[in-house]
Amino acid sequence: MRKVKVTLRPIVSRINLPTVIKSAILPGDSIDSLFIATQPGEIFYIRNGVIKKFLDLRQRVIELGVLSGGYDERGLLGMAFHPEFFNNGLFYLHYSVAGTQGPGARSGSYRPDPCDLESLSLKWENRETEYDHIDAVEEWTLGSNGQPQRRRTLLNLRRPFSNHNGVNSLNFSPETGRLVLTTGDGGSGYDPFNLSQDDMEIAGKIIEMDITKNTYSSSPPAVSRIDELPAAIQESLTIIAKGVRNIPGIAYQRFYNQYIKYAGNVGQDFAESIFSFINYLPVPVSQLTQTAGETIEAEKKGFINLGWRAWEGAFPTPIISTCSENQSQNQKTIAFYEEAVHTSVIRLQPLTEYYHQEPRSKKYGGTALTGVQPYMGNQIPELSGSVVFTDLSRAKTNEQPDQGFLAYTKFRTDGHLNDFTIIETEYDFGSQSAYYVSLGTNHNQTRLFLGVYGSMKVTDYNMGTVFEIVL
Image (cartoon, rainbow, N blue to C red; front, top):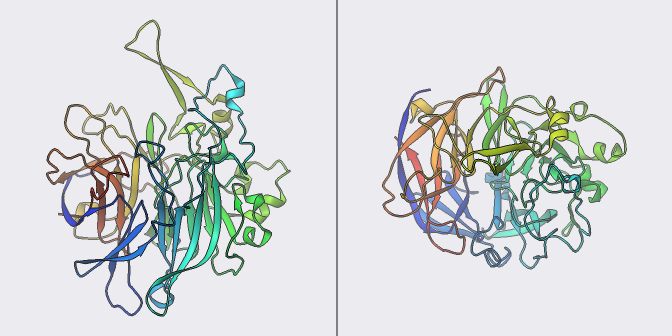
């Protein structure tokens, strides 16, 4: 793949941490507006170079950074516009709800011990009291006065830990017209309760929601499992995939008369992975709950399985510790050996991946995948038809400030692991850190937008900039 050099052109600066960047045409308008959702709960839009506030959710969003020194993975996480937004004014939000802070599912950090079988089979118990917070997925509409109004709540999700809630978590499928929710594995580390592989758990899944069904109430119960949902809501849901650790959304790219689906999986200690697939068989949630007690192999259910927690990308999940005899060497142990064997055949292989300690030349070691977007424009010819991804911060090799990176790869029809190429960026951030926190595109995927933040703390306000990626 060819070397590509781009320029970052600032569009808006001094905003809070930008989590979602999308475009839509407002009802009654004739041109695209660029919408930017920030993690603390503000949504802005830019039209003809003028920025305006669309919605302020900060009173509805959980207070961020209080218990974690400023770092937080909760907040306003998803925003999607109905395909007919121009006509019906409907849009959808996913956020962590104010006033729902709980003690968490367990105290302390989790690290599996292959020598301690109990550490490999932990259960999330007392869920009604031992959880971290509740996430809401809601439908909103523009009222007759042009002001956004909450219309109904689609889901209330009880989350065990504060992290791994997903980001850019709501998108509409151009294939089915359904709203797609992407959820992380629930948090902590190494998925302590193995929620991502449990078919009954909402955590660690990619879920389609049929919003045309009038089955949702103004206040559905807070749940963590699909069999806790009212039957009417179960009827509106299907599951596409499981085995997700943490995910920066799902993206679609037209491929002749089909769509390629791209899903990134943020790694634990080792690898960041981008998966792709075309064919899949979504499984109705109502079917899963009816057969919950039966032994049905996952491949017969049709799930796409990204492999977590037993697999981190293309490799079994390793536990890395320092060798006692040689401090310069690392000892690697397969943490979930039996799980890795069981899922070795039925899991999906990644399209490409990069590593936290990247040994290949002209590559960067990464920290966390933060965006995956196809590019179908012609303004950057070398990228046309490719899929672009971004990492929060390249692995540091010197004392320079932290800065993320962009890269791209191409879809392969043979299912083999593909290489990727770093995209060189031309912009001087000076002595300021520049974490690449989000990647967005317009409706027809002909423009790319990059969200950058100057701090890892969500409580360090107004340090965000949104750039357009141009030649």
